[in-house]
Length: 383
Image (cartoon, rainbow, N blue to C red):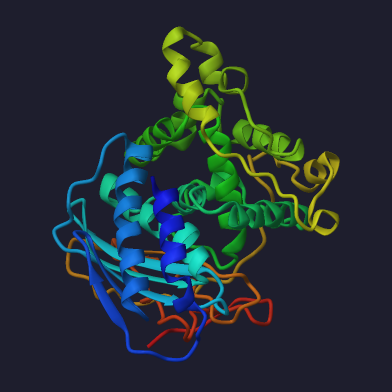
């Protein structure tokens, strides 16, 4: 189990993370990963755990292991207690096959192993399974669910703040997002919460099937009705807001999912078991400043007749010319650091001529695509 391996890895090489002085990088190769880190011990711990996450999380989400990749995924790790937890994974699709993996991770040793690494590995699992880019909310939301409680609690707190300040994303817009919006942090918090809400009503494999159907048809209202019983995205949004306002408590899928209520039968028992095993995190820190009463959340997240909040006007982000081969689609997924850290890397894909062109993730630490040190996102190209 990855928990035992994680504890062993922490005990084995924790001392190597205490120094922040520059050292020669060390490499370690596994079947599917090539890790570069400050020491051989750190590189091996990350590589071994990456393989275990790849196997265990694929079984958890898909029900089976992934086949070996044709080429390993390079991982560049920067481990220091002074670094905020963050990561970026880029890859391309060609005829439904991902290739050209590139992963960068950073943070304290504990957060790299228990949050950043499983988050980024889950991106590679979904890319391999679906063979195409996912809507940003589903990809980032699902990948955030595998993080440590200390990280998911931050997302819960952020969600309350974003809903209270009218930064919620209307579902009819969020479900169509294939690109990162300029205001990216609400996407992570809201995507994580919506994913938790849906997983609690049918488990992770049902969620994967739901996303697959939405990708196949590009009809998310129909897929939502088919898999979860909500009439449309507007009804899903209303029910989700009420759930958040009530404290995001654990759900009984056969009482809360219209689809499962209508189809209650002994065959639905495995779905209930899967939902019961899903971790549900409720924010407890900074309660006075970040928690809100149900009435505050509900009033701050009023749903408009078109199925969403009135979203803020956003300036279009910088767009780059594609350098990918004909027929290949490039994709980059990120896990931002805390917004107060100027080193945060946020990559925004854009589509030109049918292909997605993205800025290559910056080295960590280094220049960022969006500098949020002043509280506002200012885009600049990485060259």
